[in-house]
View 1 (cartoon, rainbow, N blue to C red):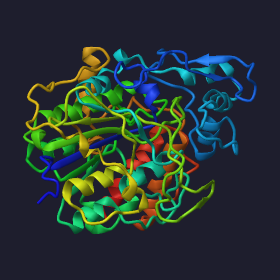
View 2: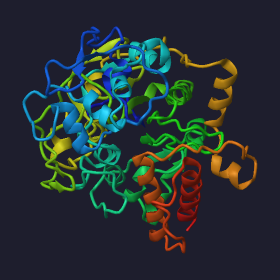
View 3: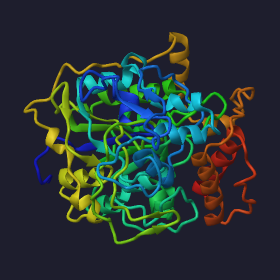
View 4: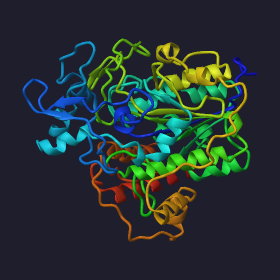
Length: 469
């Protein structure tokens, strides 16, 4: 029995990577639209330095990958480290990107480029058709691991960097669901980043390759809660769909459209709520100062780098999709990633909060205001690209790259030689950790692998070995 008598029986979350709200949706006509007059100074300490204005000129591929560790985000928000003022002036994005680009000022200026809504039609169509949340913030002003863990557990266990070596031991929303008789699955493209939370034998069956999402929808096996992780690394013709720079944003658009269309055409549509969300801002410009007085979740304080978990991160795109929400709504309620477990507790009558953070977080079920489900929601979404390219790459979402690889059915000519991002390096460390947990006699490769293809092969094989063990 659902405590609030909600029509929702299934919550599906698709969490993409490293884009700020203004970068992706700032020029959308709904929400608080950018005026074009917003700027950063090349040097925020010098009021006479060049002003770099926002524009809608962003391309699909961004290089170099913007810095977004805790220290860099503090510089982006406040102009420098230790210069904490309230509210944050959000004036250091260009400065940090110039530093990231080894002093190249012109490359640094590109951090102010945002998307023309027409270039990312899948995401912007959902924002226009359903509920756009224009004050959803990352839970931590820092990188991926922390923010994804807040989505799962409303804490990162006191860790303030991407770290695959830490022994994470916090209770998760997945634990709470199982304890109360509800089902869950995590679907992943190459490696489930959350696997360190679920590496015991009784939990591994809930981690499924991405193509299983479509099969579960078709066969009437959708869990109460589904969390979808994109593909983080190019592997032959299977392109990364996470939208993490320097990956092509179009492949993430294909993923958004595929997930929506599969759910929309399924028997679950009128019982579901889909959340399309990003884990953190990835170093891209946003004009809104994050809240700086939120509860520390569990009393833990990080030392490397120092952080006390009482400030939220930068705004990220978030869209709520369901036939039970009104068309074209903008919700300016303050949300953060701990709003996910908080809302699951509300929807399904779960008895306890995980931490002080989800206990305090606002829940987004307030948008389920329709008395009857919409019947006019689009069946398909537009996506960028040429028709043949779209058909080819979207078709790959329905196949298992590991199975194809093992059967020798892939094009071995497509091997990405892109250098690894810091996040991808942490995924190589995660693969090494799985080999250790599974007692595999495999030498650690973190620090030795330098390119995407080698990382992908190592990760796919490590995950296969671990789950088979």
